[in-house]
Each structure stands twice: as structure tokens, then as C-alpha cells.
Amino acid sequence: MRGWKLFLGDYESAFQQCLEELARERVLLRLWQKDYTLWSESPEEIVNRLDWLEAPCRMQGMVRTLEAFAKSVREAGFTKAVLLGMGGSSLAPLMFSQMFQKALNSLDVEVLDSTDPEIVRSFAEKGDPRTTLYIVSTKSGTTLETLVLFRYFFTLLHTMGEEEPGRNFVAITDPGSPLIAEARLHRFREIFENNPNIGGRYSIFSFFGLLPAALLGIDLDRLLEEARKAMECSFPDQEIPDNPGAVLGAFLGGLYRRGCDKIVLLFTSPALETFGLWLEQLLAESTGKMGKAILPVVEREWKVYPRQDVGYVVFFTREEELPRTFLTSLEGEGRPYLAIPFETPHNLGQHAYFFELATALAGYFLRLNPFDQPDVESTKRFTREMLRNPQELLPEHLPQDGEIRFFPEKAALSLKDALDDFLGKLHRDGYLAIQAFTPYDPSIEKELWTLGGILKEEYGQVVTLGYGPRYLHSTGQLHKGDGGRGSFLQIVTESDEDLPIPDRPGDTQSSLGFGALKMAQALADRRALREKGRNVLTLIVPARKALETLVRIREILRKE
Image 1 (tube, helix red, strand yellow):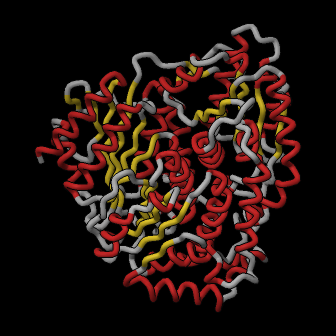
Image 2 (tube, rainbow, N blue to C red):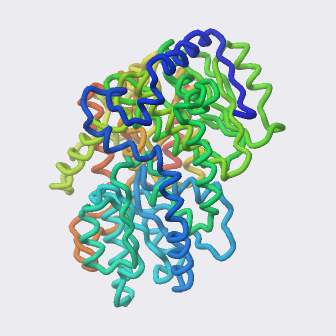
């Protein structure tokens, strides 16, 4: 724990009680014994989810295999790789690609985790698909977004005259998943069968994380060595106060037990922000259920929330970058924080493992199973129902203000009326989630962060930002499984021209477009949230008007 800085204030006693409970109840020993009763009376979705504990050691034996595969891909003439995946299959590769500089003679690795037609089209148009390796990454082998993206790019290569388009594909999935049969049928270059006893969001040190890392040229030995050191620090024979993962778990548990159930994540370096996205999924999907939650909030503003239910974790790259003025402000307000040094990208190995351990311990303190996701299925089910008649997705006579259509909770004649009704239902001790079913565009993202800042300042809300459908595989579980104090502003763009999804790989016939799929996912999640009694406002805007609409919302809020 060299360089860590911890401030607890009034939360000191709760933190110490959690540390003492870990020792008294022999929690670390029981964790390593894979004792499911730490979290539940039932072993279901626990005993088959705990092999992440030993993954750093187990995967050291696969390093040479992964490196040899990466070398063979380069020698075959591939210049880049695109990972097709969602959630636990995509966020670790995204983090690796953003945090590590591209190694010499390695591939560029990009992550495609969207069904927005503008984004999919942009991936098809940049670079040469014939020299691109596509990684189809899904634990279950049934993830809808991943499979439709596979069909699209396979068909694209087929129409370009490639005789064996399957040679441009590699699969990562669990043994026995439907993807294995599909991959064999289409003669994929390689199939990597992952350890099935590792859950998606805990899979960073498995094929799901390490294969993309190998293609990027990351030093796997060093990365896994950092993770192995963290694993050894987490053995039950170590003193609890000297175990960083246990300290993190007690920090999260102690704060939660004192009513501090929101954790702001701040980074002194923009390169670390994708670690926040990975950590956001880990915490949200693991703890947001049974009416409980620890809400992770990835922030960019160095401001203190004037609320008592918010704690902070600050990551800094060097001692001289430690934001001392900000930390002094937190101490002055009595707000608890933990500041953690992130000296090199390879430290990711340690920090990721410590947070996996801490999240499992947080589940113990919250008395819930941190390895399942019981509320994710509702949105998937509603999406399937809506896609049976995609031409009837939207009601014919939605309220409209200019080119903006909206789903309010009660009759509204204008965008301002709809916003007034939505904002009037915000919970004082809740949070507001902006769900952006928009392209990943820098100007749009900047305006979304500005909008979030206004909602924070003017309405006292803790604000999160997530892109759809990515967030459905991340914070979506928490949105529907927590105590119900969240409000949700959905902004959904419609493209002028949809992008067809092939009905089958290699077949140009299409009965569904990516735009229709994205709309179905947004409206399905709206329906799932409304069934849970959540406050939701959905705005549907032309893609060309997205930025203009956000500016207009900002202006309306400023005049309130």
C-alpha cells in the first residue's frame, strides 16, 4: 500500500468495524475456500464464478501461446484488430488499448461495443477489412450485439470477394457455447475457450482480456506478475490491514453502512479514465441489486459534492500530481477519500485484482451476491419482444417539439414541459443517469458532460453518463436493481439512413437495421425502468440535430 492516502473522518469507526469483521469471520480464508455462504444460502452463480482468484497464476502458462498467436497474425498480414463485444468482454480490452502505448510490430486494437449505425459504418469505412482481424468475444456465445456485428463484418468481407472470410475472425467464448459451432462452421482462424468459472466482469486476466493485450504487444509476463503480487497480498495468511484489497473492501463496506453509497472516481491523467469505465461495471453490476447499491460515478470535474452520501477514490500517476488542494477541501467537508498511485500502466495488474477482491468483499458487507446480474434479463426480454415488429417500435403520435419527439411521463406540449415534469420528480438523495444512445462524437460528449454539470450544480444531483447500449452491460443492472432513487434521461438519435444487419453470415438479405435495433434497446430499457417505477424521460432526435438538441436542453435548464 505504498503511497496510498486514506482519510475517513466520521467514517473511521465503521471502517475499523469492517476490518475487524473480516478477521473475526475469517472472510478471506472462506473466500479462498470458495465458501458461497459468504454471500448467499445458495451456491448458484457463485461456486462457478470464483476462478478469477487464481487467474493471474493460471494464465501465466498461456503467455507463450498468446504471444505466438499474435506473431502469427502479424505474419499473416493483418495490420489491426477490432474486438466485437460488450461489457465484461469489451471494457478490459478498451482499457488496454487506451492505457498502453502501441508496441513496435504490434496491431492496433479497437473496440466496437455499439449498435449505433453511424459508429458501425465508421468502423467499416476506416482501414481495410481484408487486413483486419475481428475478435468475436462473448462468454455465453449468445450476446445479441456481438453476434449481429459478427454477421455484418463477415458479410462485408464476403461481398468484397474474400473466399474464406472466416480466416479474419477469432472467437473467445466459454466451452460448449453456440459460438463454437458457428466458428467451426465458418472456419474461424482460432477459437479460444475460456475458463467457464470466471464471470464476465472478473475476466480481465483470462483470454477475454489477455488475447487483445497480446495483440497490442503488451508485456503479458509483467502484467500478470503485477496481478500475481496482488494475489499473494490477498492470501488469508496476510494481516488484514496490510491487504490492499481488504482495505478497499472495508472502505466500501464501511461507507455504505454509514449511508455513503456513491463513490466518485477521479483521475489525474485522462489516459486512466478507461480504468474508470472498467471499474464502473465491476462495482455497479456486482453491488446494484436487491434494493442496494454502491453507485460508481466516473467524474471529470474536481469539485466536492455538497452531500453526505458521496465518497471519493482518486487515482494519481505521480506524487507531484496528487491534487492536494482538492483533498484538503474534502477533508474540510469531512468527506472520506482514498488516493491511490497509478505509477505505470502495468500497475493495472495490481489495481484490477485489488478491486476485484474489494468488490467481492463489498458484496459480503452488503449481504448480496456480487457475481450475478438478476435485473439484466428484463431489458433483453423486452428488446426481443419489440424486435418481433420493428416497424411498430415507436407510437405514431408521440409529442413533438420541432424535430424532437419525446416520451414524457404525463401529457406535455413542449420539451420544456417534459423537462419540468421530469426534473420535478428527482430524488433529493438520488442520482441522475444520462443514457446517450448517440454516436461517440467528441463534440457531443463534451456537451453531454456540460449538461451533466448543470444538473449537478442546479439540481444537486449526482450525475452519471453512459452510452447505450454499452451501459446495459455495465450500470444497467444497478439502475433497475438498486433502491429506486435514480432518474434517467435518455437521448436517442435516429440516423437518416439505417444500416442493414444481415440475417445470416454471408447473406445480404436483411430484415433488421442497426438503427432499429438501437431504438428497440433504448425503448426496452425504458420499459424495464418504468416497470421498476423509475423516473424516465426519453428524447428522440435526428442524428444531425443531436448537438443542437443538447444545446437547447442546456439553455432550458439554465433558465429554470
